[in-house]
View 1 (cartoon, rainbow, N blue to C red):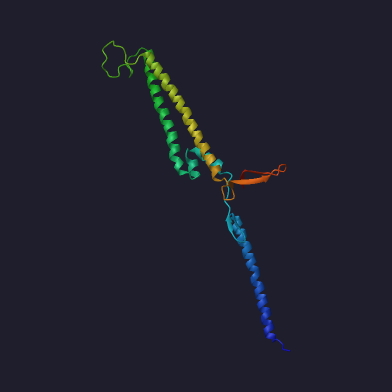
View 2: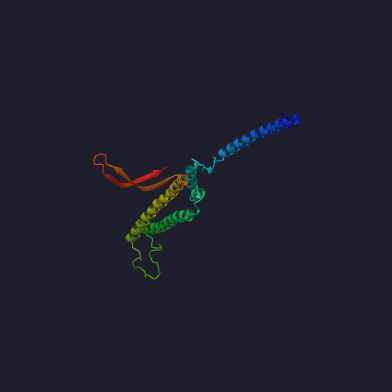
Length: 215
């Protein structure tokens, strides 16, 4: 019978103790890593790392607020930069048309008021400066009144249209922010699948198509 040397037994004990000491920090290190990843929205599993997309519930209200303060700013917040020129073009066009119609309305209104006061020096009385003395004006009083009402109506319509475009800019920013956070990962799917079932009475097969939605 052979006896193992005492020094050999001491070496085995030392190796076992060292191995046990090295195992615990590794477990703690993995737990710490998983905790850090979870805080960043990353889930660590046995075979795959899945990064979850964070959702900001205040993003839609922020986008709407920014577009209300300054049109187009909500679209910039949503990173929909291509929409900014459309917003500026739509609202800017509405403001231009409102201003243009309002200018003509004021010009006809001023001329009509001066005619009613007995003056003949308005811009629509002799537009080419070639009328003979006592000749009829280029634009009669009733024409001035009709044109004044026409441009007033057009001005008011463009005011309503501009306000509607401004509100649409806010709604677009809000809805776009909602859609950006909508879950569109690969787990969502919709498919048509054929199926067959046996009629319990006649025992004959029935064929059809089924709409399958996976969440």
